[in-house]
Image 1 (cartoon, rainbow, N blue to C red):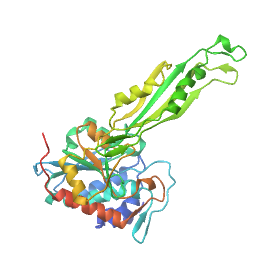
Image 2 (tube, rainbow, N blue to C red):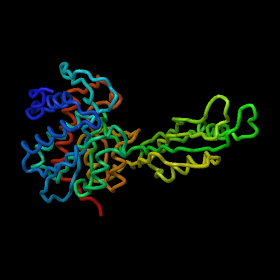
Image 3 (cartoon, helix red, strand yellow):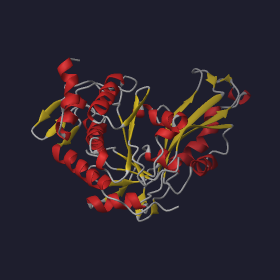
Image 4 (tube, rainbow, N blue to C red):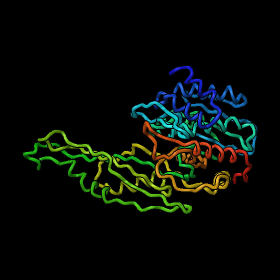
Length: 367
């Protein structure tokens, strides 16, 4: 990548131009070093009063003004793997290219807000993190919470994932459970001498297929739920009765269930299973709209509110006692393609709402 292309990140003064510059820098998961370098450099050169800490390809910038509250703004640097690259372009009032929506527009907003941090009514933390797109357990945000908790402590947080200018409250839990059914091998000419593990799994498969968890309303928001069988594996070859079958089920559950309760719901549908193992446990988050800071964000922007269908790091924040919401530029349904598009209006609207939000004192956080 050319020097002029890279230097655009340091020079850009508008959120539109900065988004375009960031999109032009490749940052597929596990390959975020160049972008992390540019973010760190821009912060240290343009906002020298910030305390900037680099942890791998995670960059955390904090103010230390001893304000009554601390707000964290967070966004990931990486783009989804496996998408064919395309040259980023600007067309009129639109930036197009991988990452424009998910979520370099949000990162651009964060970088410009950092330059206003001196005059904020709150202490601010800006967390730019890596590897979000390859699973919550590999995310740089998990590393920060596990090993550098002092860097990401806050009274409330805003995750700048794309929400199309709406406030998305809470998030679903994301659970993957693997069920193992065992049997005994035999020749298919004499199947009665064995025990077919695939046949043993079929009653549970039928129950999973029929499982239709109802929507759940929390604080006036309706969270849909869904369970899907996402993998079935079993069999040795065409003349052998299989002695093992595994079934993986994904459960997107509403925040009224914690992870343990959600596992219990699935397990009850497969009493024949000989082994049950949770492969992924991303916790849900309740709406948290009654928190003074998050309620103030809603009022400041006059924002429409909807439930978050899917999992984001809002769930991680909630698990660590930090109320959080999703709010960022761009439509998430356009994400993960070479032709993501985000508009000038969406970028400027998000920046304006958050600029006013951090500049305004909020009621104190309840004890």
